Amino acid sequence: MPVWLTQIPGLGVWLGEQWAKYVGHPGAIGELVQLVSGSNIGNIYRGVLVVGASAFQSFLTLLFMLITLFFVYRDGENSSRSSIISANASCRCAGNASRASCH
Image (cartoon, rainbow, N blue to C red; front, side):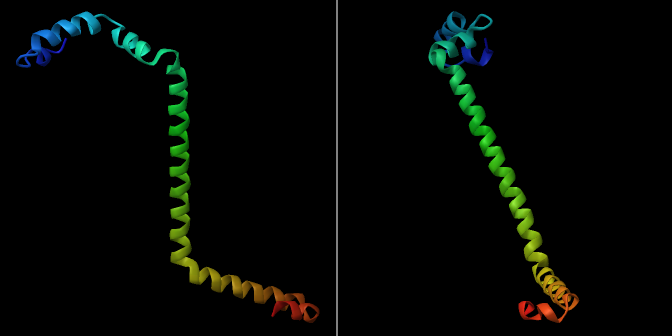
């Protein structure tokens, strides 16, 4: 039993007795949780795991999206310029037959 619990003015003695009665033995907190939640503790546990995993997956997706956008905005102009140059180079290599589709 925590010492500070019994030192609370007016309620300390009563709280100490309640602690000893309901939570004083090993496994008492688990028993209280079982009483409160009943047989639903497994479902609650699985639900919390699913929500936590979904939140973590969403966080990772957002993180990688922000990293990608950072590099696109930082190097976007150079990337678009180089893709246009490479497209023009491929049209020149293809010859006169496909020039209509290049422009």
